Figure 1 (tube, rainbow, N blue to C red):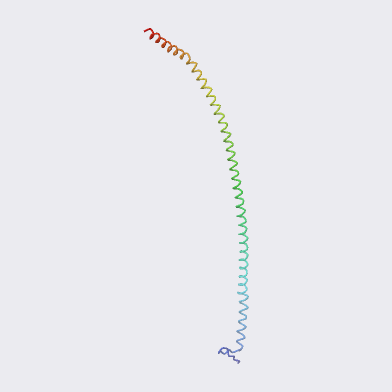
Figure 2: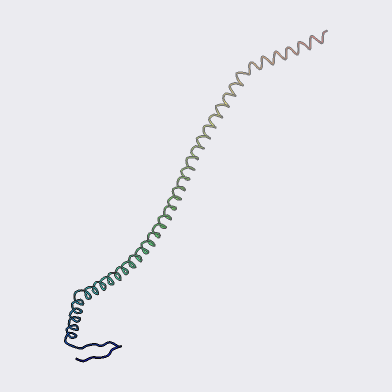
Length: 155
């Protein structure tokens, strides 16, 4: 037997050593085929999926930002159109209001003029109706004054 000193230990190199190396290599090859390679493939697949998911996530985020920008642009445009529409409707309502008020003013003015004419006619009629009474009262006052004057002058 051959002996070799390695750090104070003696290793015997015999046939069992070769069997142990063969068993180690067979176990290594078997584990490599059954465990290590599938595990490495699994890790590689997961890394590929993760990178793919990261890329997909980045693309989705970019698309979401584009959609958000487009949404805000459409929203701003719609708000502007809404303001323009509201202003147009308000201007239209003010125009209609002015027309209605003008018609109402004309009607009120016509009614006022008609009432003024009617009132003026009633005043004229009342003056005509009061004229004989006024003449009678005036005659009575004059006769009363002339009677007093003639009666006071003779006393």
